[in-house]
Image 1 (cartoon, rainbow, N blue to C red):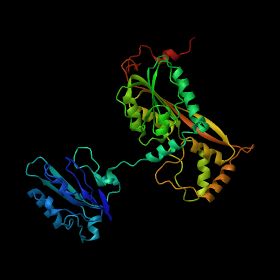
Image 2: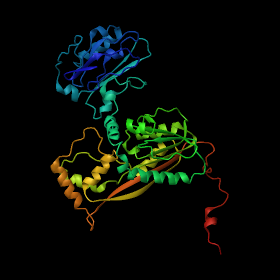
Image 3: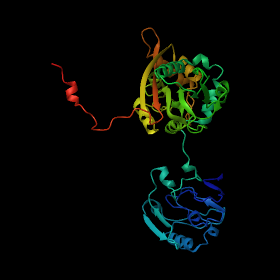
Image 4: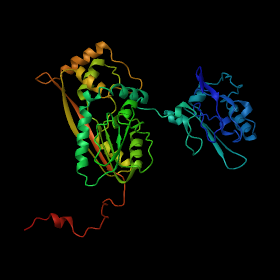
Length: 420
């Protein structure tokens, strides 16, 4: 597709159920009544304004003619030649107040088209309601998912820090230590392991185990002789691993529920998932200093953070059995804000959100002063990192199951009664 002014013009190839752009709730009837064995041809897709255009060459069926004629009597649609848009003239009140509903039964009796014209929907997804039960294929930019984080920038940041990452890896080293401590309490052994977000491949593989390392950055993936891919787009088959570990990456994944679901799918029955990432309540003093520096219009500079309760809910939503989520706090002391920013940059934890704005020199100086004002008596500033640890098992019939309700043989009152 290519852009021309305020409209999107192009050729749509025939697809069985394609979705087109709406104009304040007006469906593109040329797509609805186009015969399935005929290409859609050239036409103009509206720009969500108070008019819609159609190519009359596409509307040669009898039902389509009757529908469009009825709509045009209401003054809603103006015909236009191929690749040429004409201005439609009608009162503004039609797009904001008028609510008309038309229902037409096609001759075959197997399809029905319902059309409604009314106030502009408040949510953008209402402008792109699917025309059928099939999943939309995204012929309009309005149906595309919006990423929280810029995937390309995330890869570049990870490649940038690959050579000097060991200087700033203290946070991930703490996470790995916690994961190994939890893994040591499991009595069973694991033979096929996935290191999800491998960084410099510092997670040690158990003796005799085969470990596959995956990272979004190409250079980190090359360091571990692993796979370069995003954590929410795993390229592995179902039931490929019996242990998946992840340290320090899930807080920067666009689709975290989808990533956890994929992890559960690639785990074998009774497989274990261990993860750690920074959660809600981290970098509180840095956030306070930045808000003070930018006044009434602060920019988004700290990534959205997940609390421990939401993390546990995500495990359950992904289908893990016996889910556990807990949090540990790590306090790191800095002499100035520059040391903290250098660590965040060195561990690839700087801002990767779309639309980010560079911090001006004057704002950085104000942030440094505000950060220094939070120092302890010795002149050091203690910054907080809340690390969330997740533990979940892939469902299996061999796992312990809760007893059925009413199956107890003794009363709890009798058990707790003090002995005389």
